[in-house]
Structure formats: structure tokens, C-alpha cells
Image (tube, rainbow, N blue to C red):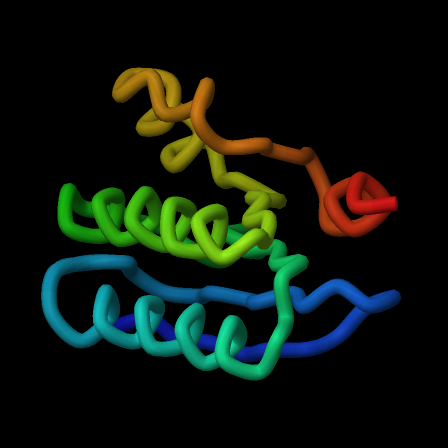
Length: 114
């Protein structure tokens, strides 16, 4: 099973719900395209809701970092919310927890933009 992506707007912030596995191939490409699309539409406040992501491989992790950099370089902000224990552990082990702004829930992440 690959990743499913759903976009919605909450209080001027775009929330991207991801579910499934963020892995090499289609899943990583889908995330990259989604973020590019949002930036092209002028949406600079983005929260990735990872509550339904059960697994991220090195390619998926690379795509998160790449997406973060792309958004930041275009004057936007990318934040993470609802990390599962597995994803939380992965970000801690790879020290990427210090790169991303991580929130326990979507509400906190959306409010952090104001």
C-alpha cells in the first residue's frame, strides 16, 4: 500500500493528511508533487498530518527534508503534526526532530502560525 494524500484548509493553513507508507517510488513522488502544487498556488502555511503514516523509509524521510527545504526557500513554513510513535522515534534517531517544528496535534500546529 502506498500513501494517500488529502488536502484541506483550516483557518488559512493547508493541512495535508497522509496515510499509509511513505516510501521510495510513488509515495515520495506524490508528496513532492503535492507540496509543489501548494506552493504554486501561493499556499505557504503547510501542516503535514502524519497520524495515519505507519512507516517511513529513508527515501520518504529524504522527501520530508526536501519538502521542508523547498517550502522554506519559497518563504513558507512546513510543520509536522500527529506523529505516530514509530515516526517520532525515527525523527529522534535521525536527529531530524531538531529540523522540523513538530506538534502533538493538528490544532496546535495550525495555531502555531498565528
